[in-house]
Length: 511
Image (cartoon, rainbow, N blue to C red; front, top):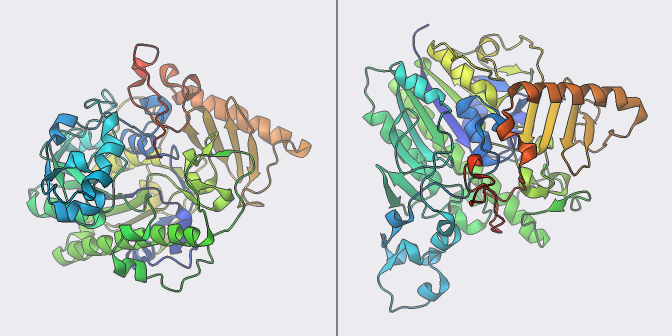
C-alpha cells in the first residue's frame, strides 16, 4: 500500500448524540454531515474513559488508562510558570479577561498575563512540566521513524507542553484543558503565545500553516485538536454569526429531565430555563464553529488534490451530557463517575483516501483501536506487547464486515463492559452498579442489575470484564487502587504514597 497522509480531527467533550449522522435534527454542521455521507460513519464507537486526558493518552498509545497511568484529567505538569512571567498583553483586547481589580483600574495601562482571570484560575497548580507518558510510545513516534512528518495544532492536555515530542516536529499546542474560547494561550516553539482570536479559528490557522510548511516529498500526519465544544457554554464566548445559526431553535432533541437521583452532581447545571437554553445553544454554536473550520480544511485538501491520498478521521475525546440522565457534564459530572452511553459513546467518521462512500459500521469499536489502525494505513507493523485494540482498516474497507468483540471502558475505579446489546457498569467500591439491555432500553432508563432473570447475564459480563482488565491492566496503574474522584491528577502515579499527593481536591471545575 502506498503510504497515505493522515489527518486526525479531535473535538473536546462531544457525544455522538450531537451530530445529524447520529440522529440529531438541531445541529448545524454541514461539513461533518458531508464527511459522513461521503465516507464511513461508525455507529457504536467508544472512548476509553469519559474525561479528557486519559482518553487522549489511550488514543495515541493504544493502551487503556490502567496501562498508561493517566487516570484523570491532568491539572498540572503542562508548562513552566516562569515562561508566562510578565508576558505583555494588549489591554483593550484583554479587557474582558482581566481580573476585576485590574479591569476596573484605568491607571493600569500596562498589563500582563498574570493580570488575567485565566492565569489565576489555572496557573496556580502548575509546578513545571511532567512527562506523564514517558515509556509509552505514541503512534506518531512510529510514523516519524518511518518517514512521516508529524504536526499538531490545538489542545494537548497530556503533560509537558513546552517542547515538541512524541514524533511531532510541528508543535503549536493549547497546553492545558482549561482554555477560553476568546484569548487562548498556546505554546509555539517552546514559548507561550497569547492569541486574541476565536480559539477554534486560531487552531485551524496553525493546522493550515503546517500544511503549507511541511516537506512536500514525504507523507504527513496532522493532529487538529479543537477545544470546542468544551465548556464554558456562554453566549459571549462565540462569534455572533454562530449564535445566530440557532435563532428560534427550541432544541427539541434535548431532554429536560430532573437532576439525577442516584449520584452526586459535581458540575454546574442550569439555574433557570433561560440558563439551560443558553448552555445548550452555546454548545451547539461551538460545534458549528468547529464545523466551519473543518470545511475550510476539506476545501483546501480538495483544491490541492490531496484528499484522495489522505485519510481524514473525526472523533471526540469523550462524550458529554447536557441534561441526559439529569446530568450536566461528562464522566466526572457525577460522583461516582458515570459511564452512560452519552458520556462514553463518541462520533467516529472517516473519509478520503479511497474509502467507501456513504457506508456505516455497526460493529463495536473503541479509541484503543486507533493506534493499530493508523499504523496499518501507513504500512507499519505494530510493536510487540499486549494492546487491547485491533485495526479498523478491514471495517473501513468492508463496512458490512462484523467482528466479535467486547468494548471496555474505565474511569478510576469505575469499569464498564459492553458485549452485544448488554452493558454492565461496575462502580467499585461504592455502587450502585448498573445492567442495561441497549436494544430494549437505549436511553439506559431501566437498571436490571437486581432482576432475577438477568443474574446469569450480569455474572457472565462481570467475569468477562474482570478477565479483560486482568489481561490488559498494569497492577501498579489499576484505577481501583487510587482515590480517583474526577477532580484531577497532578502527578505521575509513581508519586503516590510519597511526599507528593497525586490526586488533590482543588475544587477546580472539570477539564
